Length: 326
Image 1 (spheres, rainbow, N blue to C red):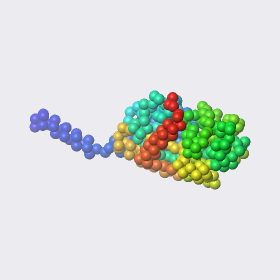
Image 2 (cartoon, rainbow, N blue to C red):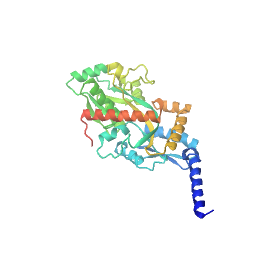
Image 3 (cartoon, helix red, strand yellow):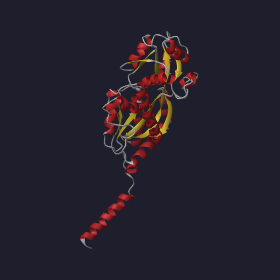
Image 4 (cartoon, rainbow, N blue to C red):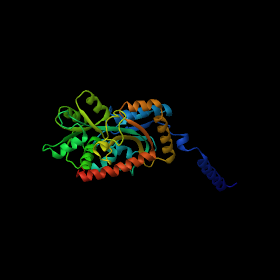
């Protein structure tokens, strides 16, 4: 046998071995630590969700799954880091609504949630509750809307900052109800809540757990839930859509796990299957519901569809509100 013929046969054998070998995702992934990037500070709900998932995946993989906090620019810095990372499945991102909103609010954002990422799984939604200070002359949401229409004094609402879910909840309420609400942004939720409790602002769309804590203490009054469905934590409280007859109103703080768009398909399938198995564990449901979440895991495809819809919707709302990218 000539050398050239041996070479050809060896090449053919190598090609056949590659074609019939188990996929990388099935046989080799992961063979080193996986990172979940959280684009916010440690201790918040996004961080807590990421750590709960990481803990279970670490056990499943026999490899460390590490949570890293890369903060700044409302979440854009951490998101940009993952968008530019090696698309091998070892760097993931835990996302919340700012992921679909930031490109419409910030001028120099190079990433796009629809183009540059693929979803591994959706986790669930934390509703907001529209609460008012007890001094506000409104016991129901229709009464607050009427107050905003007739009062000479502005109806103000505090938020954790421009583009946050409570800002968008307030802006969408103003647009859908045809009223004027004055937005008062703060550096974070604690500062926004403090001024609401002090009566320096009228209203705030506040996360369920915090809202109910202060409502039960008599420090705030609850008017309506911002999601399309009532909250299991406050089943007697109507939704905005029910209470104010605004059928298109639906705002919640959703969460999911995503990866760079070019991660190989076999790796994505394995990641999605493994995260789905983790989220199906009974203690995970209890853990997330303890955070005030309506726990509702989604497939990667379903979460991609949600992100695409939210990206389009909030871009339209922001443009209509006249909010200029900074």
